[in-house]
Length: 272
Length: 203
Image (cartoon, rainbow over all chains, first blue to last red; front, side):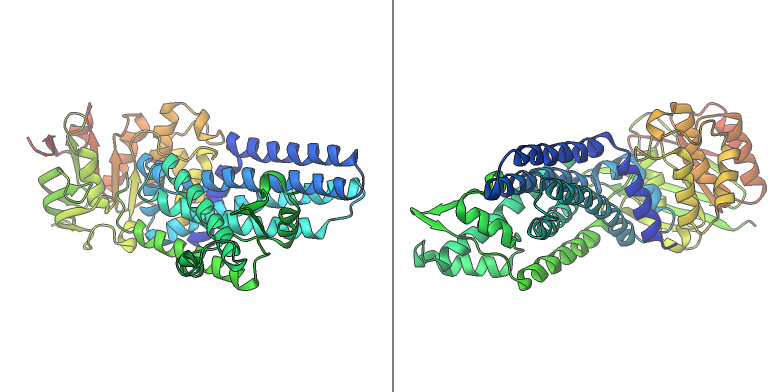
């Protein structure tokens, strides 16, 4: 087994036994089930919206908490405590150690979303909404967003403490989300042209928060709840369109680039 | 004459660029089959010297470890490292920690179990956050013993009978042992040579 797989597996196994992680997964599950119970007492579109908005809230708030916490623990505390140093002194190259630690955390993020998405599909089926393909696609979109959050937090954790790393990652995600909203407003001529050049440049350069077709449609109707409040700029309701495949690939490329930057930065980091 | 395992001149450790030196002017000569203890009060730079030798903390000075610069991955495979305190990630069993070190070093599970037994780990199947500090120190020792390394580096080793026996066995088969402790007890006699540090420099 390669060093990447050994360290990744050990990290994933350790995280799987942490209380905060288990509690986060279970709380998310409980909210999805509660949303399904509430949706089960309603009819038609109201039932569908309730199920979807509660689940989308879990993906956003719960996903953000899990991803930021996982990423923020990639280096700092374990590096100062001696655990990362033990992995390095086995002769495993430093970049491999860091990428493996990120990979182990990505596996646990994937497992978290797999559990939530499976629960949402089962709950939808039970209340008569079928497997709900659009909600599944939204889960995949949010998973990609949270991968971005995790990698940013991991990069930050090379130099910052765990709390600061998590805050930086969450702040970065909100910034990319806002940039997407501003781009949509620019395309809808809802803001002045003086800003459009800057907004377009920033949007084309930085990672993009991925918006699913389901969320775009619900947000436009003002039915997405916590996951996406209706966007109103200069008294105009702005519809944030679903992300293109190009945006999906662009953000994935950014994730890979940020992980590579983290690995490079980790080369010179002092370890205990 | 036995092979030089560590030859270091004017070791310097600085944790931040432009920051104060944590260690300066330390020289080490350690040969195969020999031992060296670094002593001194807490915060005197003992652990920093070990980290410099391992390439964990950006070392300055002229340092050669097993014929290579510190931190060389191939050389690190020949070193057994036991960090101080409680260096493990929570959620893992002590046995899993030692097995990880064995796997990464290219050794099999038998080597890990042998090291666990040699170090006297009492509860290898208990998660590390639930074990006693004594077992944590034994687990760290077990990690260092995996695969019979050519150089043992022990930070604040506790003087269990197993520690003393393991150090004697290592030196008898030609391995070098570098240890650091603020409470050396019987380690100076066991290792044969010592350096005392005070505020990052030889006292």
